[in-house]
Amino acid sequence: MWSVWSETVDVYLGQGVALLKAGARETIISRSPATLPLERVLARLAESASSSGQSLVKKGSRLRISLSGAWCPALTVAIPEGVTRWEERRQIALASAARDMGTDLDQIACEIDAIAPGAAAAIALPMRQELERWAELLGCKLVSVSPLWATATQSKLSRQRSTQSLLVIEPDAATLVAGDGKGGFKTTTLPGEQQDAASLQAYSRQWLQEHGHEESGLARLGFGLKPETPMATGPRRWAGHWYSA
Image (cartoon, rainbow, N blue to C red; front, side, top):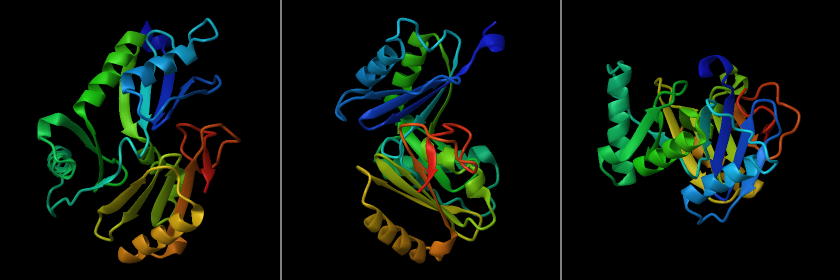
């Protein structure tokens, strides 16, 4: 029955803020201290979603969780030439992520971006397990956990022929993704509160030059907490929260 009647619930988790959107209903915004444990952040979000007396999250809903760049930064993975099997690529990405994060392979979960191979994301297993427990408490099916910047790479804007690189600006991070000219991608994430436009532009220009890209080929996508008119070339997920930065 759930497979027939279930709806999709989208959740965004950033440092100090969480969003929940169920179907076409209004987005719920929940703010918390950045130091609050994830368990409490999720509990407060669930409380906000049911504050009207009728929970917006129905049992059996499909839960999709988007993590901010601060929670799940972009990682560059060097895939050797000749390695084409997806599982082999994922294992290489896993080893690279564990090395970057200074932890063991069995302590993290890692995936490669489907649109930008060579760009990967990883989260600690305890965080993944906490999200799974929360979904179970809600009676939902957790169908995906992914960084928001990976959603941005699937937008019409990022796939335009004139787009050679992408800048994704969130309230707590900024992520750059650019092709390396060899079928791979270079990435970097700047965590922390949103930087002023001049500093971010200067950093982006320098980073692009270091990787052989012109600023004219850079597409900019911003993510806002309050929805506005949907952006025609923005991602479908979280439509209305994207804007041209």
